[in-house]
Figure: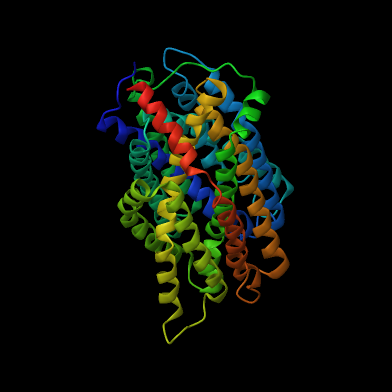
Length: 441
């Protein structure tokens, strides 16, 4: 019988989330901007539609890697466990490719830069999956009840917010002072340290490490036969699809719609971050008292209301300065951001319990891997959508319509996900979880 993870172990488990999101939020928020605006002082390195397509292709590589890594991790066995070996190898590749992305081959617009971007984006996203999928699979293995999983997800979310805050607030400041490339080295080295701290946890002492036996295709099929998982997946994909468009477009909201400098982007990320941190205990409480489904729906609804207002950024309303209005709107978005950091991981952990009923095996990684297969393709497509909006309707102060439309488009997609997630059978999931805990006690 495995040991219960002590408090120090819960904290250590959450730490690498800071490193993961330190690099990933910088890539999400700045890589499109870096390659399409001449950020190194010259002309744009790659046209916007091509950058969007390249990122989409990179995410397809990532999506395909997700179930493959998940299958190998679920079926793997070693004296270090099923998850830690994958994390140990992939961490350094992830950070190395992150730094390299901000060092293009040649100055100015070039086919070589486009080819370089394709290769590096593919390596980055594949190594990201090789670390994150096994890491996420540890959550349901280290905590067996919803309450414990919500706690573990909350600790993880705290470090995610710290990493995100350092990335999105610190990156803009560092870029303004010493440039993109120095920023990449500073952030990359910090992320590397954070990614390797959890290696101090002895996986086999605290997590179920019995390897699974299903093949890749069969494992994916069995996962998609889990009905609650399908309802969750559609809702969560819509949530992230819309959110990813807005996150990538955020620097353009500041520089194009508000006509402020790049460094001002950090102020807006900071406003959302502060509210998100304040919201963590509230989300933790609501999730335990009202359920994960209610918490997810509430957070989606808030964003559905807020995002269409992006269209009006830069215009004063009710006599209030437009910059102040923008800060208020971004701050209010901190609550659903906090929920998005906590609730989905706890939901997948609960849903994966049903897999033991379906297959008789422990395949937590495959649920995160199958989610990644579909989710990351959708996230890549969101970049294509944003790039197409920009190229078709404009992305400059003189022609801002493409930037303005990102908010309403994201809200529409979120509304679709909201409707589908209404049918998520939370009672069925919780009933099996309670039965399992009762059998083990």
